Image (cartoon, rainbow, N blue to C red; front, side, top):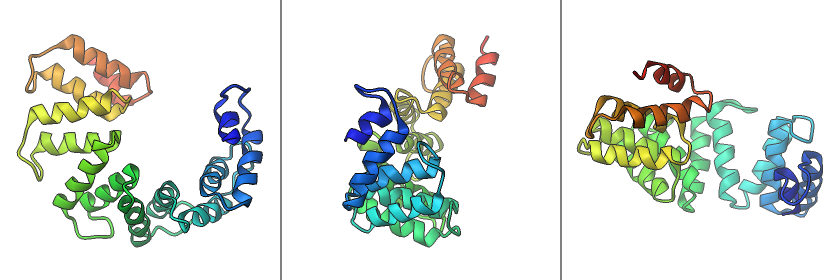
Length: 222
């Protein structure tokens, strides 16, 4: 917890090296949260020299203790082939372990694997169930994914109302893709009265995050 205070500058000046010091002390005692936080510093080269191998080592230590955040991050590294050969089967293994504990990001990532057929037979119904579980916990990516499903009528009856609902929930959390899609709905009057003011608002929020599509769409609003 002291490490987190230094990492985020809460009550003290932000100091990533000092955060790393405290995380290291916790990690050395086998505390999985500290191991995971220290792994993030090594992965990003913040406060320490970047060392993906050390990050992986720490993540495995935390993941094998059943810490779902570490399991999910480890799954991402296998899915993306970051520091390890890309291995969808290994990614699925870790996502499942995290998802089985009710960890929203693990559920969302596992849902995406089923949705895209990565390392597993495509199963839209299974993907939807996982997205719904994660979305109910407030996971913005899962909420956006549900919005897409309802917009396209994939695995569910097409519903502009439901699509807009899920986009809105994700957009209010700052999820740029959802902000863009919500802006598009208002710009074109899809299931709602056309409202260029609302379209401008959502495009602008995405554009301010540096999203290129948001910037282009913002420039095209009359």
